Amino acid sequence: MEVEELKIKSCINKYNFEKKALISILQDIQEEYNYLPQEALNIVSKTLGIPLIDIVGAATFYRAFSLEPRGKHLVTVCVGTACHVRGAPNILAEFEKKLNIKAGETTDDGQFSLETVACLGCCAIGPVVIADSNYYAQTSVRKVDAILKKHRKKEK
Image (cartoon, rainbow, N blue to C red; front, top):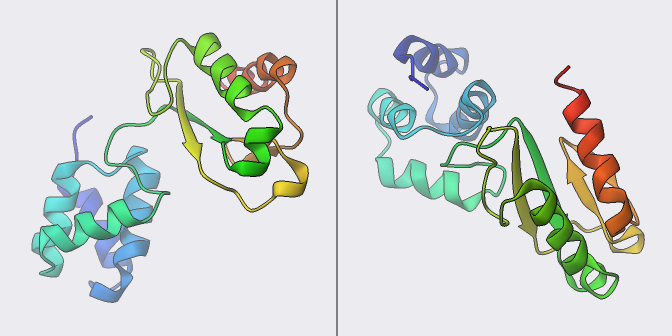
């Protein structure tokens, strides 16, 4: 995917070229490209006069940002203690099997990325899976197919 300098500068202009708006600018860029392309970060660095290392530091600090292309659908499986003891490893394994990828990877067709998180803070309803900002409580291995099917349908 090619980065358009004008789009990046438009994102920066939206916040009046203010350095303090870096996170908002990065959110807008990620919304546009579904990740933070290196070329886009270089443009932000030069335009705002912020060292690239500081921009990358901010981008890697927040889990919401990705420096690698993500699939159209992001599936996140909580593997924190409460979810773990309720079967999260098996749920994760089922997603890996159904998508034919490991956690941290994206399917070859670019449709799904699979990630894990240490805790989502909603332990009482675990195990929890998030797919495209939709929370699935008390998830089980049997529910994996239905979750994937629902998000594949969104494409059609």
